[in-house]
Every structure is written in C-alpha cells, then in structure tokens.
Length: 397
Picture 1: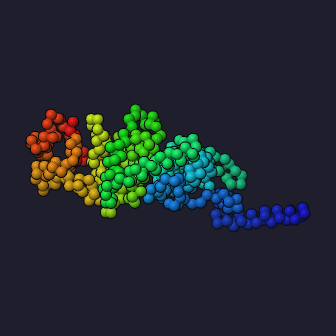
Picture 2: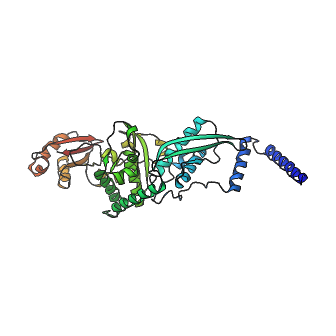
Picture 3: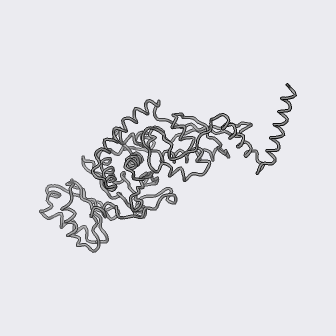
C-alpha cells in the first residue's frame, strides 16, 4: 500500500513539475491561479460572474445596473462581483476570488472604486454605506488571499425586508398616480412630487449626515434626504417606467450627485437637488432650471468627476423651457411672450422662463408685472428673481 501511495506522490510531483515548467509564462502566480480555480470548481464554491440579471433584493433595481461595473478593470470587477453576492446573501465579509494582489494600497483603491460603483449601479441597496475593511492572508498554495468587510446599516435581513416592504408601498403609491403615458410627463411628475414632498436635510458637515439621507430610505420613508438620496430615488422611479437613468458624480461647491436620463432623442442631465436649492417661504418650491439640461449647460455650474465615461447629453427637445414653451427667443416680442407665459402659469408663487439674448428683460419684467392684469402676483406682495443659466426664476412672497 505504501508503494502505491509513494508512486502516486511521485507521479503528482512530476506532473506538477512538467505543468509548471511548460506553463505559458512560467510564473508562480499563474500556477497558483489555476490551482485556486481548480479548488473552487472541485469545492463548488466558485462565485458566478456578475450580470445585469442578478437580483440583489426584492426591490427592482435600475435598467442601467451595470453601467459603472463596465467602467472597472478586471481586478475591480472581481471585487464588485464579490460585493454583489455578499450583499445578496447579507454577508458582511467575503473572499474576493482570483484577485491579483499587488499591494495593500492598490487593493484599498480597488475596493473603494468597486464599492462606489456598486452603490451607484444599485440604488435599491439602501442598507450598505461606503465604509469597508480589507483583510489579507498569505497562503502557501494560493498566494495572497483578500477578504473584504462591508458595513450594513441594518442589523438583520428581517429589518431590511421590513423596510423594503414599506419602500415598495411608497413607490407604488407614486406610480399609481402617474398623470400621463408620455415619458417626459412621467419624468416631470417624479421630479416634482419628490421635490415638493421631501425636504433637503440641512447639515453642518457631510460627516454628520445620517446614512439614510444618502439613500432611497431617506426619500421614501423619512421624507428627508441629500443629493444622492434624491438621485437614487429618481433612478428607481424612472426605471420602473422603463426610462434609463444613471447617477452622475461630481461637484457643486462640494461633492454632489445628479442624474443622466435617456429619452427618445438622447441623454439629458436632471438635477433635482439644485432645483430645490432656491430658498422660499413656508412652501417647498421646486424650479426646473436643471430639468433636462445638456452637458455643456451643466458645466457652467457643475463639475463632472468622470466626464469621459458618461454619455454626452446634447439633446434639447425636452429641456423644460423648450418643451413647455417657456423659452423667450431672440425673434420673439419679449413683452408679448412674457405675458403669454404668465397667462398660462398655474403657480401663484412661482414664475419661470428662459431668455435668449434679451438685454432688456428686467425692465420688461417690471413693466409686465406692474400691469393690473397680473396683480395676483404683485398686489400687496413682493417678488424677487434669480438668473441661473439664462433662466429667470421669479419668487412671489
């Protein structure tokens, strides 16, 4: 019996030696990778590849749920995949299979990038924040193994599922009251109903913002959120009515997030947070300055972190002031056009329109608003106006 075992051992050693020295690049790392893959296959523990069809939880995700995944390199995709299945199984620590460890610094960067992309692709995952820990262990057979620990903001899967049920109810309440089948009308409805019913969370420092305000939980359950909460809620709602939308990461004085939305003629920028930024009285006033803007427009006020990977938003048909005929063109009679806009205006606290090259707009505004016909705006009241991206926002107080 010992002779048989000895013979088997010799055969294995010879076979491994032949394999190693005849391997295409002769590297130890390459051999270890193949041995590790063999182990995963034999043990049945291999993690499947990430695909758009992966369902993380019972909430529907978004149409573009692999947009940021596809911007990652191969090593970062392995981490993203591990995160996806870890979150799906509600496991806060998991191994990154086949990850090619070079240095701890590189791995920390890769994990941070992969986690950020995962959260941007998956707004339905409201119970994971951006904190993480990396663990490494040197293995003689497999090389350096990498584990990642993420941070769940809920204590149990049961707590997650309870909130998912409540969020689903809130989403359905919104979807059941959509006023039109037109995609642009659905987008406007989502923009306005969230803007009017969810407060922007006021904070001293970003570090003090509750996790919930960064997610759909803040919008749908707590009715209080910051920019990424608004953006992610819009992504979820738009996807529910088959309108593609992705999160855009950038800056507007500080870190900021908004949306890119795809309609029939192309992509548009949509920034609900900025449309809520003008202070009003006791009413939640929502403007439409940043409703379906081009990338060129947005760059006048916003900074894009990764402009080179994003679709270029060049379409203009569904820009709010164009589509709803609130754009005063250089060929228009400014007074006549402004009066038409006021005649069709339905909000006694807000008037908004866009101008194109009219240098006398403020004097025209003063004359038009001074007419008795429009006394409902000015009688015993005062108004102030803001000029943002050639859009005039008139607030009636």
